[in-house]
Image 1: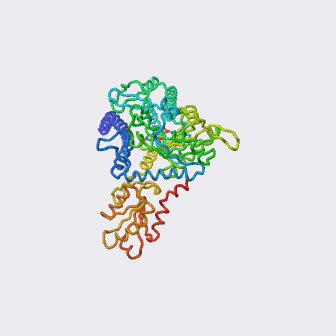
Image 2: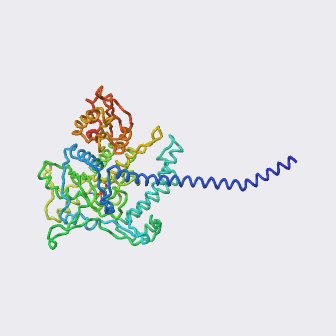
Image 3: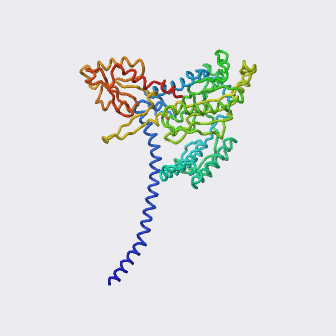
Length: 556
Ligand code: GAP
């Protein structure tokens, strides 16, 4: 009987197992897929969420506002608010001083936005400053055809990064990244895909083959992110320059363009600078100014704008020596970016295969924005293309006479060109911190490098009475001539700390009742929240030593 019972039980378990194990297996696979999917979803969402949070934080705390907002805004145009403009000015100051003050062979320039329209004929912008655009007939949305393919490539890149991260976790200290990249089949396959697609894309762009570009989009099965369809129009070229008329008389007025880069102002002034200063080759001319492009894609906040600011430097060198200077400037610029201490892993070089009409070498410094790695700065070896073209069209000789060799030549040019607004976004996106505190609350703070923070210190009397405000205002009056500071006596001290954290103020200086007795104040550090007792008489030096832009300049 026992035996029969046993057989009976076994049969039930076996039969149950047949049904139950596949069910378990199904559950397991389903959970894994769901887990993976949700991890990916959360990851992608985090990036989009982060950008959204930065956009709304920027508006709420006076960094960046959409332009003409009361008229429903103007696409891809933004205004910088009180703290945004301070931060932007500090970034500009750091760049300008790094270029013009630290290099005795670089001089500054501030050329006009309006330039003779022949400028753009000679530079090639009238004929060649085009982007390939494509429309989706269902969503009626317009895209840059090359960027659709680049985004597709970027997705494959993130697959590779995920494989690497997984393997890093699995193997810990024993992980050999180089070996892994060489041997992992999925990585090899994806890298091959990337190089094949990039090759095809470059071929289309170099040969301006718009039919092939559309075929590539179809071949890769790229869907419109809005409609989800592949109902694409043909690819067309679209010139990015804005034009307007100059002169008060309509009949005699002539067409001019808003400059799409500041560089041409430097080229047109090359001879003026050589003849009016003591510069000798190799030397550079640096300039900060507005540039305008009628961008097809008007998304991604201040990353891609129609009116933006560039910080460009053209370095003039002897022909044949340009490649050494190209490498030199690549390294110098990377070091400059990393000196901001936002995280070295956030930067990478990207060498160009598809060169612009004026370049014989080009490289981007890319930054890990919330939308992925994207161009922050371009470093280009522009040959003598621009100076020679202006020489030809203007009929004026643009030569440099070398006293040493007693010879004259048209110099070659290495250009460094960084978008101020992209730099601003890189600082903001790396600085945005949502920190969970030990008491269970959260604080949002901007970990902006102290040296470029908009407000350097806030002066906070503990109470708005008992002579604390009067004493605090004395320090405020003393410090305001040295840097931007704020005085605030409203709300609890905790709320005031949070307000300063949200705009990235490095130090809060609190006046309490002990201050009245011992002339010392509490200085709270934004990042660590650690508070230090400092003598009132040492406060100015304490802050200056930690926030001065000179600290950054010693590192570049
Ligand atoms: N003079 C060379 C030149 O203009 P570019 O790569 O077209 O080269 C240089 O632009 C930099 O200007 C870019 O690396 C980027 O930081 C910035 N930039 C270009 N277009 C921009 C836009 N629409 N909005 C914001 N920044 C832009």
